[in-house]
Image (tube, rainbow, N blue to C red):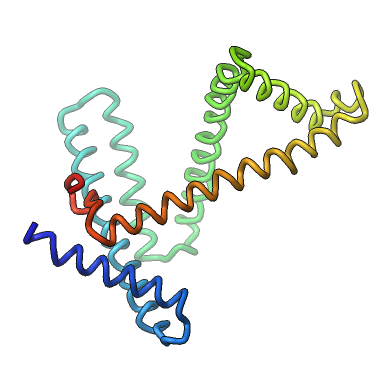
Length: 208
């Protein structure tokens, strides 16, 4: 408790400073708030460097021990150091850096999101099984929206596009706003718990 008290007090002061700068502009706390946020960016940069060191440690050990598919770890570390060295020495506008980013990073990202579509389709299939009234409503609404967006839907019935748009604009928007309001309330509650020292997960331990 004694070792974590200064961190909790500092967290409370920073949180109050950011909140006061936003809700009480007359106090002229903009400079102090910006300075704190700049320090946050610096700390995040050091955390990113620490994550890179941890990545090297884990995958380096995997390469040394020749564990399963260790060559993937070797490729990961190769491109990690390649991008770091080229980016620092030659800059991000250098042709070798641009080539690796456009021809390695971008296709891999696109492939990852493309693979996610299969998982989404599988999850949608399981969720759309009409086992209850709620699932049946979800299934019917999803079918109407898909038919409204597909050319075949308008060929079947001219009102499918308008009905699909109504579902997305009215019930879907209302549900999304409810989710966002609930998430915002949860974020506020979590922020208060962190500021007053009840939630101490960021200290590496559990709650009080």
